[in-house]
Length: 71
Image (cartoon, rainbow, N blue to C red; front, side, top):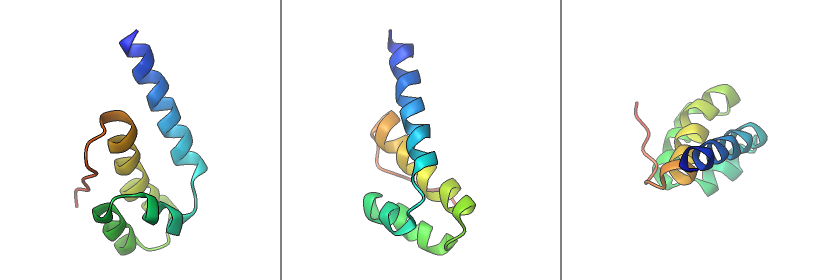
């Protein structure tokens, strides 16, 4: 049952990542340290997703830890 829940959460996370393309909106929704890195990446959506969306959604929906972005 736990694995099913984790899969459901992961799919919801992925759907959110794919659906969100509003860069300013993501910056507002993400914790500040993620938004700072997003600002450095610029408006290249593919890089922005890799550096902002994935860490933020993983931390928020899967682990509920503070977002941490590695360089």
